Length: 347
Image (cartoon, rainbow, N blue to C red; front, side, top):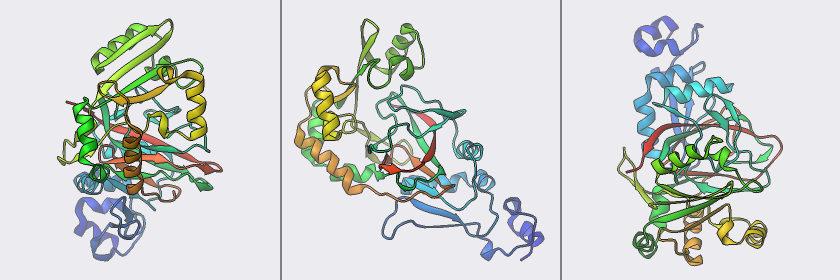
């Protein structure tokens, strides 16, 4: 079938192709497969024919993309020749309703362009545990996107896990403990000598701005000179607004001191003590989470962890409630940028 015939047959999809004659097998523009045998996460989406423009295709197929995203939790777009950050940012806009700036920060990131940031500036030799982006916030993104500008020489995979399945691994007793004690609590100490200062986290130099933000977000605060301590209580389980699925959605494991590498954990505990740690988690009533419960939580994430090697130009689109993400250690150059979209206010 020549291009002229394809235009008549494909209507609005005809412009997705280049102007040279080509053959279109069964009119199919993309193909979907499992990235790894027996695994639904992520769903791999590739062009079925040469010269498919991902941005134009995405504009015409948002319903298809969202249906697949809600089912699988994550989509990996590969081999579409997306070559730069501006094209990636446009893809995020084409498949979302609203992009988000990075507010109430917890990870060191650099702004690349607009609302596109480095995925993290955390050292290459440190592993980042699985988490849902900004699950501790009152307003959080429903979608998070990653784009591979430069794949790492070795390692550096963005680990992912289905939070519906993570929840399924947890015992009824553990869920009941969190429910009875009001969910989970995050305590943060913003210091100048460790972690992110409050000026960076809240993107302001004005204490009154911080207080207004905290009031609106259900966060209590305490000033100690120019240092700030905050507390916020959130549920451990959330219900997805579109699928209705219950998901394990929190940072209770990620921010707990015991999840850090032993050397880092011991050094922080010795230097600051639990009360002044940059981050620490508790049950919602402020009581400590038992070591056995934390071991159960970490094991549930491990059982569902999926990793894959990045290829240049890959775009990973995650439903931020359905799927948690992390990062493996790596060597060599690695450039992964991230965009967040579609704010959702917890109720």
